[in-house]
Structure formats: structure tokens, C-alpha cells
Length: 331
Ligand code: CP
Ligand code: NVA
Image 1 (spheres, protein in one colour):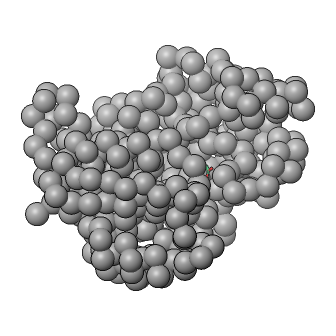
Image 2 (cartoon, rainbow, N blue to C red):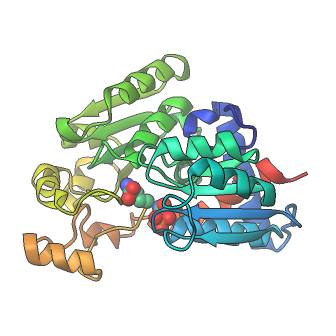
């Protein structure tokens, strides 16, 4: 990986296109080997710290299973229970963990924290999501699209709708631009990706040949898109008071059967998860009672439809994270 820290993955642009696709290719090989029972542990004796300032299901489990499959050990440090943040700084924590572990996963509030961790740890650090980027999610998303698209990556078109300002939307824009894909982001102006991220995507597109569209016109954005992608409308760490404003702004970007129809093709549905697609969660039930919506960013009809590939995508978190660990740590 080409960033300042060998073996680390702090953001998508720590990788060039070739390296990105090599990791996706390695993940596909590891996935097949696991299925066929021929996986060979290449991380025996390695120790990996998993540091989470926020909750997680997929990212944590993907790191744990990937590490175990490869013969490594993990320690989980959750939002409660370590000194990080309150009694001990990021740089001190980094220097302690770096003496004991071969690599560190970090999910935190700020991108600065994961960068500082990597500056001080002296071992590879992998960003498991910050407010800015979600790079390990991108590897899984590209593997998923690649598996489902019959042809080169550059031919793939996808459209993200919803909170275009959030980590997943930014990462998708930059990843699509890096890989030369057809990327569309549909969001109200107030929730579009930051101008510097859009400018960076356009710069990448000049060499990669990517087609970039950032618009507030949802129907235009989805036309011809092979994949329709959404994420929660209020991300972890954002105040719950945001829900009212977000719902009023984002309803036209909700993924419904009509919107899937507006693609004009047999598009597939992606979501990084977790998703508020029904009333089976506490939050989903509360939002239903408050705003009368059954399912928020996507309807249950689309989420449960045969066009939805969200659980393939979730499984691919594990195979792609395993590729990151093997690429960084295997001898
Ligand atoms: N998609 C994702 O990162 O899920 P978790 O929050 O469960 O890790
Ligand atoms: N945008 C979401 C992604 C969760 C995987 C969040 O940051 O909460």
C-alpha cells in the first residue's frame, strides 16, 4: 500500500488502481479457497488489535473471522473499557499497542485519530470507518459489483442516493473515480459530498476515465445505473435531532420500487448496512411512530427483493478484510 505507512489502509487513496484491484483479486482467491476447504493460514502467530470507538457488527466480525481463519489472534477494545480518549491519548495508545501487536484496526470518530495512530504505532493500521472514509467497505463493494458484472470494472455504473456528505458516499465517489467507473451521487445540495472531495474525484477521472455525476436529480442519476446504493440518513456520532431535517430533505432520494424502475434496467440494490428498512429495530419503530415512515432510506420491498444483494456484500467484508490482513502481514 502506497501511503506514508507501509501495510496501512487509512483511506482509499492509500492505494492506486492496480493495488486496489490486486486486493480485490486476492479476496476472490481467499473466498474460493475458504469455500473449497483449501485455505492456508498465513498469519500464524500474528496478533491484531481491534479498536472501536463506535459500534460495529460487520467490521468487527469480519476482522475477527478473517484473522482466525488465517491463524492470527485478536483483541477487541470496544467503545467502553480501554483508556483511549479519556485517560490516554491516541499517540500514547498507539505506542503501547505497537509494542504488542502486529497490526491495528481502528474505527473512530475522526480521520485525524486514525492518521495519528498510524503515525505513532509503527505497525500497519487499518481504518474500519471514520467520519471521512470507509475504505474496507469499498473493497467489499467493488468485489460484490465485480462478481455480479459480466465484464471489466470500468464498465460498471452505480448510483449512491441519500446522505451524499457521509463517509460511505465520499468513499464511493473516490473509489469509483480511482477505478475509472461510472459514479453518480444523488443528494440534495446541502448533503452532497464536500467540494474538495468532488474536485479530487474529477482530477482522478482525468486519468482513470471515470464518469462522475453529482446531482440533486435522483431520477436522472439512477437512469441506466447497474447498481443502486444507499446508506442510513443519520450516521453514527451525529445527533438524533438530525432525523427531522434529514427525512424532510432526503425523502425524494429514498430507494423505492419506483426508483429502481427508473433505472430502466435490471439494477441491483446495495447497502453497507445496518439498514432501517422496516420497524424491526428500536430506531425503526421510533421513527415510524414519529414520522409515519415504514422503512427509511429504503423500503422493505426493495431491501427484501431478489435485486437486493446486501448480504453477499456483507459477506464480502470478511473476504476483503482478510485480503488486507494477508497483504499487510503475511511473510
Ligand atoms: N458496514 C459496516 O461497516 O457495518 P458495521 O457498522 O456493522 O461494522
Ligand atoms: N454512514 C454510516 C455507515 C455505517 C457502516 C455511519 O457512519 O454510521
